[in-house]
Amino acid sequence: MKRTVISLFFLAAGLVSLVTPAAAQNVIPITEQPLHGYYTYGQLRGVTTEEAIRSGSAATSIPLWAYSVTASRDSSTRTGVMVGRSPFFHGARETDIPAFIVPVKVDMPDGGVFDPAAADATCLASKVPSTVFGNSPLFKMTDFIMDGVDMGTTQYIDAFQRANFFMENVSVTGNRYHTVLSPVTTLAEQTFTVPSTFGATFSGTPCGKLGIMDLATFDSFVQSTIAPFVASHGGGPTSLPIILLYNVVLANPFVGTTANCCILGYHFSFGSPVQTYSVGDLDSTGAFGAGTKDISAPSHEIGEWMNDPLGTNFVPLWGHIGQQSGCQNNLEVGDPLSGTLFPSVTLNSFTYHMQELAFFSWFLGGPSIGLDSDFSNNDAFTLDAGPVLACP
Image 1 (cartoon, helix red, strand yellow):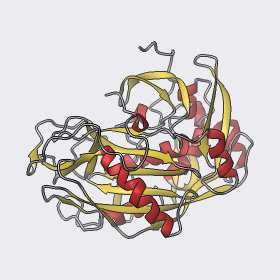
Image 2: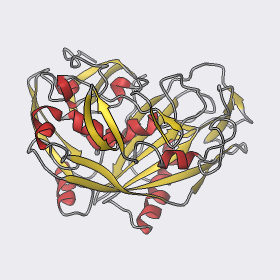
Image 3: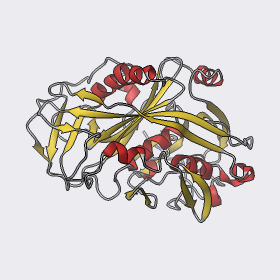
């Protein structure tokens, strides 16, 4: 399925789905297994990239660094921005970005309740999803070995980013180049009451039930309610709000069935100074097959937030791989490997599953500047995306 760009569907908080969804039913059975899970994103509107970089430099939003490179896949000049500090200047210090985890309890119109702050004896061995999430390698320091090379004791996305630019850039700095989410604060759970006909509860998954709700309706809540809530607790544009859902995915738009489903997560930005954020589902239903487990969706989205925070990093066309059956032209590091997991990591008696991610060089072309001259962080890609596709 070709991913839908959120910003083309709605432009700001307060807008709702352009198509009126069908009436919700009581616990709708799922007939297809596994469900098709995919990811989306939004492009920053109304603010230029230069303005966003200036606000980062002025410390009124997250720090951003800019690049301009020649893509060997088509000899074009490509520009973009990423989170943190540039590895190309052999930067020798750590960038810390505050993160605020916001668990969101979802109350469906049919009575279904999906609560990440409540222990789940059915599908999560009586563990609390938000606690499992906060204790994960996305935030806790872990020794990551990638392709036989020690990336250091750090968080998963930082380890990936070090590997992403390892050859001739990060490697010469030793263990000094890092982009870390710190401090990480878990805020009080918030509740989203899904409006009538904009979501429903579905049965028939391998474990428990699955909630599906309308993307634009929920994102309106994120921008109008969650973002100000985070700001009131010390967050804001200089931090990353991470919105945690539990066994709830999104449809664009929701139509009362599994059609237009299932968006497992997305990242977006809005406003000036620019506020970025990430939304992801911690899944324990097994509804999406073996390639989607626990924190794989949040790992996908936080990795893409770090590498394409504004949704405006355009690259030569690629496709027919991962979640993309057609063509795509941006640097979303998770999409080409959606459903491909990195080796699991066990922490605090829980086994976590992160997604493998594609390197910068996979999109732009070889030779790779990534770890061991590869094109992803667990050897799924040993070549770049190949010849530029001809797409309508």
